[in-house]
Length: 198
Image (cartoon, rainbow, N blue to C red; front, side):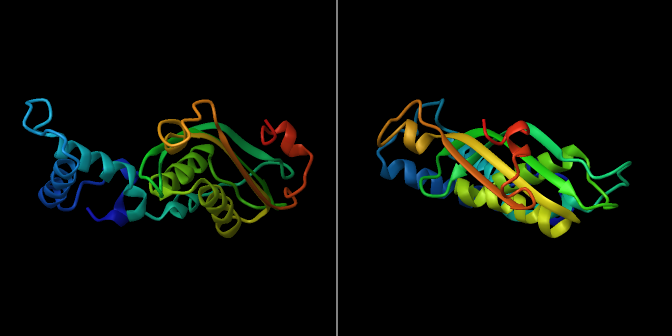
């Protein structure tokens, strides 16, 4: 199986497990962390596998989820999926940030649409990379605008960043909010009722 055949990022296996684990062990030893305890003996391998899963989005094309479409009955209606929970890695510290997203798009008249699960998978694949939240929010909207025939698209992400809550400022209650909207949804009041303003 090649990475292009993957149905989801969690199907990816680590390419060079021994090499990755060796380097993780070197990092942990350089930080003077003990690896001789029975509970820590396999830590380098576990850490390498975890990073493989969390960064597997590098090896897939998220837009592929938007290739299967179907007819939409009736006139165009705003399509929204809310509370898309995710975990991603902060590109700056490789610490996780977690939260949820709201994704919306308005099809063009007569245009075909995709299933809601495809929007979720699109977002999750982009999240499965070292990311900055601003780019993640933008990438999802741009993919929808590029791959589908739509009048506009929008995405809002609210998340908690470990690099802010667990270290540094230790702002435990801090949340980051990003929004991106294009086309007719750029300034549409309907976004408030679709969950993009909450």
